[in-house]
Image (cartoon, rainbow, N blue to C red; front, side, top):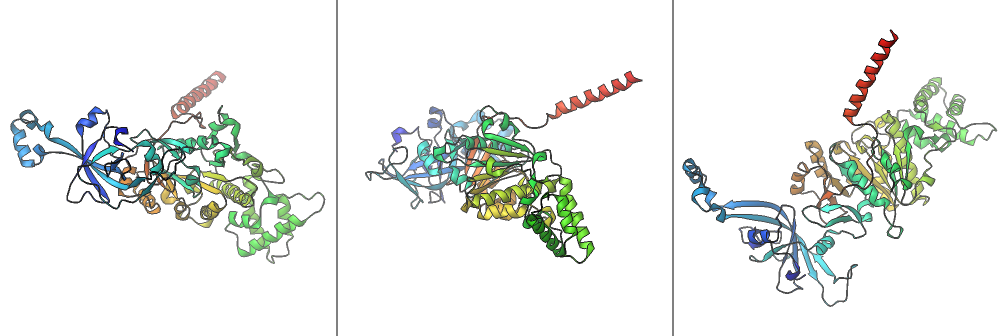
Length: 534
């Protein structure tokens, strides 16, 4: 790329004791050029340096990791203090003329244009190669803001990818390749209120808009707070969205295997498991006319089972099974959702569990849906899918007893094996320190919004190889709508300003002030009705 096609240079490389090197360099910001071009050099911007004099010379890429301001008049503290007693230095000396800014650049790599080999990239432009820096740039070379097209290629953006937002301090659209983002799973980590659901909504919009020729995934969402209910009513996305509420989830008893029962009821003894397995097998094999595959029928099979010699074993087992009966989701024949029908390319199935109070019931439902999705996908009966799990730390807890971790096993299984079958996970959590290390470590891409808890920060840093000290320090300072993408989705960690959503936001529940007003109005009405009655 010729310098004539670039905006004005933003500075000049200087020589220090430790740079330029193949790892970093510093440059003094050219205040005149900066002002002339109407731009402002900022920490986090990407820059480039052409290391030769012709257009085919190697171009070096890097980002501004830190910036410093200096002024020779203010270097000696005792002199400044002495002068400031009488009159400010700025009123006696031309201090502004001696002020300058230094930017430190971390070198990411190089780009070498391949001329005359006939190769072109997808946009039809001359291709080139990226590599590591083996020679440091020379002091005195000019520094430029990174060329947008080259920057997109260098970071691994895809013009047909998911448009998440814009690269921070640049106008470059962050379009992330679908496969790179989801095939090896993704985790969205942030504190409450930092914009997790907004970011996920943007990703859902992009996936629902994917064209058939570019590949479309099915989306299954475990929605804990009803945050994605608006998609079902949206004029643009509603036709491709189906929402099922927790109270409408039903699982036929005949589709529950003994292995599922073991996972759901981990407190059963070996003897109780054996009785249950025998009873379920007997019930399934019973072809007697009129026999219903119901919990009541299962209880009768347990009562008549010859496996257990002690009556206490059967009584205790039936008491344990009563927990499942109380949840009222096991049916004789009704099934909802019907995953083989509801999971389709370019469609979204939202399982809204906001009306379900019991955490164990939620875990059992998630366990069943996740296990069935994985089994159907391995058999090729449903398309490649992304399973989005909100509040994932509640369904795959790192430190939890077996009866509190009903769904952890299948989530970890999909995390380890899913990429081979087109089964992807998107884990969303505000407490990553409580999230299964196995599941989190298998998420090769992390999208991190603001996190302030020190324990969560340490856990994130340990579980993601792409987080260096610069990024770790920046996480606590992120504003709402700002995100860091680290891992397999991009060639290098990037800071992104998440775009506005296109869909209508329609969460369950009213704003707090409206709930307060409504409560007082109802109380006043009750009081008025009582007084009128008396």
